[in-house]
Length: 338
Image (tube, rainbow, N blue to C red; front, side, top):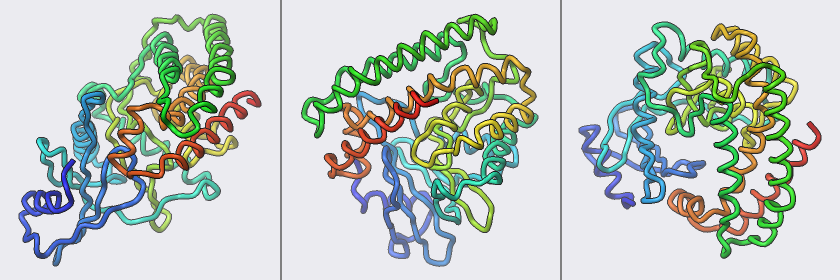
């Protein structure tokens, strides 16, 4: 963990600027990393990201984000930050600052849905080469891999941090609500897959293998004068478009209204040229990914999750744990009603 004076010095070196003419201001919202706006006298401001790393979580977040942005920028995609400079040893990336503000859930309209789908389609326009990027975080390419991934996330929640606030209530939720819901969803998904003729180990078609922003949703979007920009690609890479679509529709921070679910999937499928089997796989996995995102919401109760949050935001864990538990309960209630 570098102190702010060291981060400012690194930014000055990477930008070849005088640190006396620079100012560092923390930006809100970072959970796994520290993010700053860097003002540079006489130049456009930039954004500095200091990426989290630990012995338990060795993912190279800087590498994934940098390679994704370079790939997209070279292909003319401009709804993203321009990569400017990086220091791999210090885990620092510097990017052009984007205009705009975060969206609220109640603001989501059809034009936002279309912009999100069109962004993914633009990423995958010719010359399309998904494997030029590493696999996205938790990439899955078969039905079996999808279900195993989610099953592992459920199992991890049986090792909650006993010292976490509200740990007893969290353990009760996992045992009495989350696990039974997952068993129902898993069995049902496998049964429907058999009726659709989707084999457990069948790979997606070439059209369904895509460049994925991963962790993609309106929680990572900025709007400026009706133009939508997207940020935060530390999990990006190549992946199954069914996973991308399900993650987008299930992320809970700025949720996609149910009324727009079909619109997004249809526009995405049309833009990528998915056949009927490809479209069916995304719908088939939707409930399973609702369970996955419920597990992600509960990460606050895991020791590793708490360490990442402390790196990014410090303190206030009791309030955060209670909020996440309430979100998880709401997600399971929604799953039952679906």
